[in-house]
Image 1 (spheres, rainbow, N blue to C red):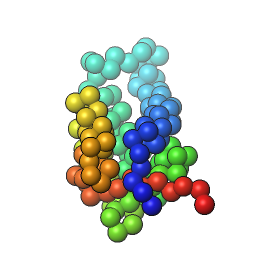
Image 2 (cartoon, one colour):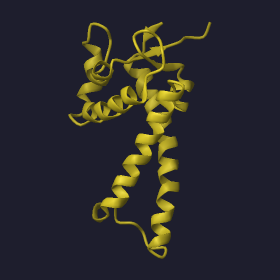
Image 3 (tube, rainbow, N blue to C red):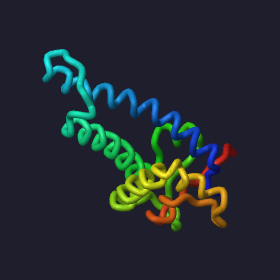
Image 4 (cartoon, rainbow, N blue to C red):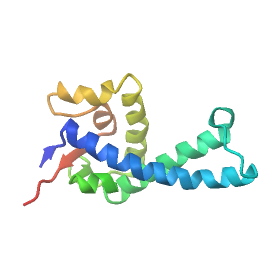
Length: 138
């Protein structure tokens, strides 16, 4: 199988972002309840920010280390694998998550890098020793 293209990655990211947004909404409800129905001020509430980051981390690391696929990746027929074809470990998935953030920070340069990489890999692919493979319909 071939490494996933940038457009497929972005498509899966869009699908996953909608699902993560819904989960973050649910994770916000206890914070609103604790404030008596008042909105949460994200910039003033470090506990809230950390909780939201942990929810996002748990979502991705759980799916990547369990099946190699999030729901968005499944829709786009992508699977996260090690070079040997196995599902990544929790530590590899965690490193990938952290490095994906680093890849996004400089205007997505770590993702765009894939266009010039000889193996069609992003920064977080290389750092975590994982590959995002595309499995076309047979």
